Image (cartoon, rainbow, N blue to C red; front, side, top):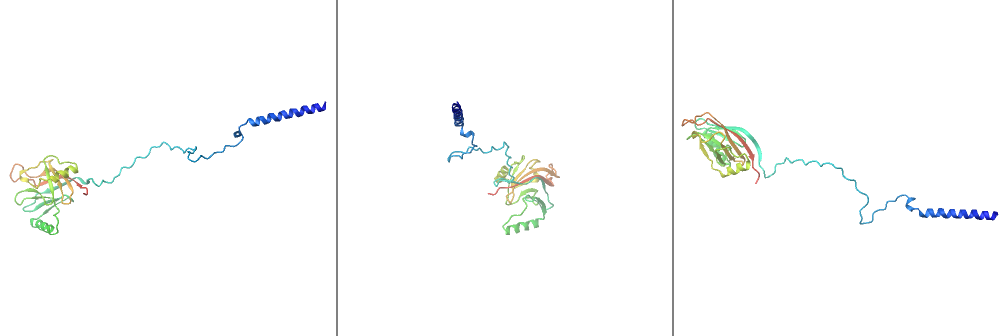
Length: 228
């Protein structure tokens, strides 16, 4: 009786052990082991993804303030300038590169011209108002200009092209050949491009022979030409 009971107990224990072992065999080994990252195989992309950039707007580039080498550079704009009729045989002058108006005696101006010629230079004034023979507005030597009986071009390239074509050297002011609003495109001795628009005549009388204006006033704009 006791021997049979012992045999029964041993049998139960054996069956339990077999069931436990079978349960362990059915488990996935990965369920009991910590996750281990496997390095990517050479030539294959890594499974780790880079952080995505934030959706932010790139700042707009700041526009350059540098003037292109092939463009005209504005030196002055709408500057009020003028040239006055001199007394007697003197010369009223207008230098547009500065700009500056001056009056010279005829002997003094002749000496200035001679000195400039000796040095291989040109005198500084660009326009003269003289009355030695008859009152006239004169373009000095070494410049080119064109007269426009309407408003001169406002773009430097066009103004320069018109001035290079030339055509103006002098006009008799006792004949009143110009009107307010007309003007000139002129290239100075230094190569600057000038737009001159007549804004006012001071004094004078159109109805008489000797009624030339005492002064001619302009609005002047000057550009420095691009280097060739």
